[in-house]
Amino acid sequence: MITYRNWKERLAAASGVAASRVRYTRKSTESGERQVSSHAQQREAIDQERGPIEDTWLWQDSCTGTTFARPSFEDLLEYCRANKRSKKDPGVVEMYDPSRFGRILDEDGAPDLFTFQAVFSEFERHGWQIYFVTVKRSGEALPDMMTMAVYAYAAALYSANLSIGIRSPRGPTGRPGRTDAHAERTRA
Image (tube, rainbow, N blue to C red; front, side):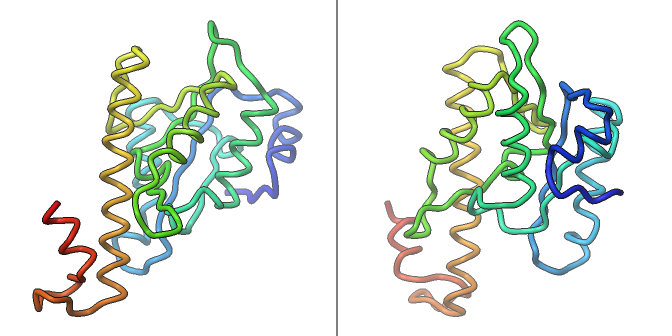
């Protein structure tokens, strides 16, 4: 796969013709067999659902999803801003799962639904619909927003709990990864 420094290089490689269908994959930087082939697995699942796409229009990051400060993700968003689509003919950004879009945490390490929704809405505002293999959209704004909020919260909570487990090998319960903060959240 060719490495592009930015979306303008992708556009030049496509003879100046902007694609209306693009794709994004993300894997964590953690090692392990599951992570090694994560990009390929995501791409294969999306290919099965949507059909193949040219490598030119595939953005991928190998970094945490707890922030949107990811080089390829930021470049993809810039591409969508610069290549606005109409509501009647929206562009499509394909992703495997909402957790690949982001597991956004705030500065305190808690799920940040507002930031997730703001960035999600920015794609939509520029005429780009996010398509997930694992979560189907209804086409109705309110149910779709509620569904995304639930998935965003679950994904971010997973990352928050991973972070707790990394910081504290044994918490007050004596079980790995349990801290006072985790115990408080689970009681609430």
